[in-house]
Length: 75
Image (tube, rainbow, N blue to C red; front, side):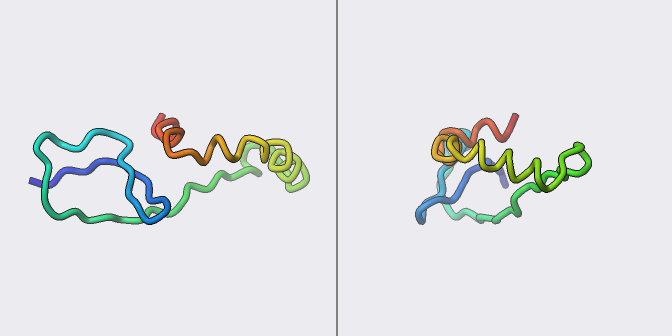
């Protein structure tokens, strides 16, 4: 039986974001997905505004990059 669970790869390790199937053991296949891109222009945000947002939100980057925060990407 094949079963998929979401996870992230950091520092040489795969961290699952949800529980593995019961009694799961054996081989796994890891597929790296491209990061999702946001079309800022479609949201009415120009390059100058995007740069300003990046600058203001940079203070939160350390928190966002913590593995336990990845669960919010699934919402």
